[in-house]
Picture 1: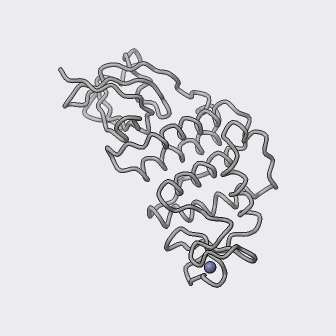
Picture 2: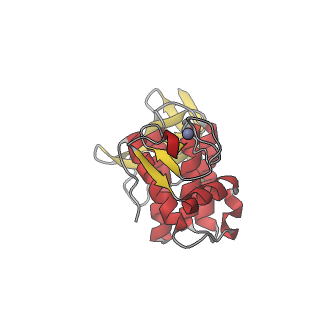
Picture 3: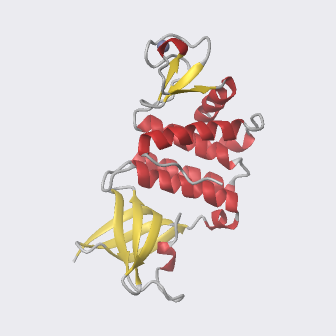
Length: 236
Ligand SMILES: [Zn+2]
């Protein structure tokens, strides 16, 4: 029997047939894969953790059926589920991966980023919005929508006055290059983007930005997300 061994994070699962689950895995090696978990609904089921979102471990799948035959859990990130704020932010991270990645397309850099972000939410005393803002900036950048905050993406001039997010292209532009489908990025939101993008995940807990700046930044990114993917992230 052919098998596939992968490192994976569970993104979601749904009922399939009477006792099975279809599990959406974000794997390091093969990107997003949908696999089947057999007879998993009883409380004594062998791999019951493997259907829970955030679960990270080594999965073995039989081929070509993609039935999960073994799971070695490395981390369930269980702490996330104990706090509703953390849970929503962490779900938004998984949702972003599901939305931004095409099935079967590997993205090792994003895989590592998801693990760092989940670890930060689960174990650090951090403003969870900071984690999501940092994560989204990085996802947009990976897709070619870098939020350039020093120079206008169109004319290349250094910003001296207001900045705008061009919602058609996901780029930051100056007042001279602004079109009708642009939203202003305040000075406060702009510096929030800058600080969060250059601060490592494990240092985010040391940051205390001005009150409300995280929500403002997240709101802009969610509008950008909606324009890139046609839906908004579900946030509290
Ligand atoms: Zn310009």
